[in-house]
Length: 232
Length: 232
DNA sequence: CGCGGCGTTGATCTCTGTCAATACTTGTGG
DNA sequence: CCACAAGTATTGACAGAGATCAACGCCGCG
Image (cartoon, rainbow over all chains, first blue to last red):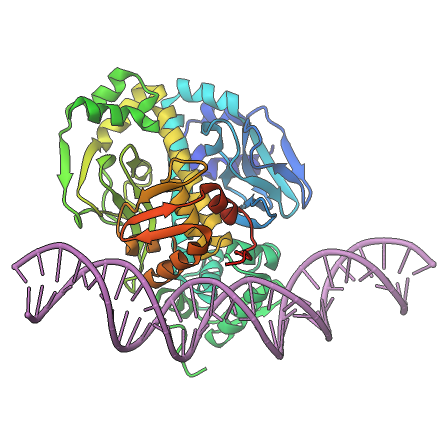
């Protein structure tokens, strides 16, 4: 793990607020693990004895139903942690995790974490902050699925990917469209059509490159329930 | 707060595992608060300086969009705690809370909680367990909305309300159908029609009384994706 | 008795899923 | 270098689920 990796670790809500020593003691000795696209990290129901920090690449968390359908409940990127909370739930992962691009991860041992928490109250607070952050993300996701149409959810997704708040910008879709569709709670075909519906609003797509003419306009489209009564 | 209230408190994942003294020190002196149906406890964006234990009645957590639409993200009952995690998120509630039936609550001070956590690592672990539990609930809710049809979600809701695992049973709908509909991510009209579709599967409704002929049959209906090819 | 909130029912419409056909991209081996 | 296969994305036709709009019935309450 080099210094840029260390910076990433320190940028997470979890390791950003704890002392250098505590962070070191948890992850200092761990090697960085490299995974190829498609690898499964763990499966729903398995014993949860570690959580992860993403140093680079993308990881999806998903649930599968008895009949084989799959619901993506989160996609994580560099600077994010996942599955921290699983270790306090009877020690079983409630979701499965799969690497969706080549990825570099840091594995943090669960047993070690539990020990450190008992010694270091500040770490407990950091864990709680991190869990709360995830809680909030899930609440927002539920709100989205329940209240927004497919094009609106897509627009919101694009806006979150962009750092710009107004004017025009260009972004790259970070992973396959089928996965984006699943994360947004729709089928790939619907994603295509949703993209088409955003075209009149200044969104153009070429492969994984997306350009947005007016970010604020798109944001307004997400907010309001009038689904595009413009002159199209 | 009488002894039966205390039993309820000790039945929560949060206060069930910590020592008597720690639990006492957090809630011992607090009076029970009584709320009438319709009262708002707090609103999305407000400073979060307390969380709650439900002693009796029902409380809904929801988000409202700029244009006034509302998405229920959780409904809590006796023996459940809510908003514990909010106090570790920059001190703002990410949702609004409203009492949906006459309700008895215990208010737990956030500042006090933070202090106790630093002193009592076991409390931190209990908080984490509680947060993880909520996390898992939300993940399951997302899975449901994404993968199940309206009648299936309703059937699942009924099954969770019932304590029975097989055979027949009768249950009471705990709150208004409009709220049930919102929690399940549908409109009241759709809830009516979903109930109608469950009729051939042995579900009959009269006012708020629901009787289920064969719980296992209903469970099978939720699991499988064949949406009722029976002889109806 | 009449009013208002809640729930149901019906007709219609819109969105999204499904199924199928067609590019397009990528990688492989001849 | 090209042909081909496999995976991925788009497009079209169609069907079904659920939303919407409107009307009506039911019950509790003043």
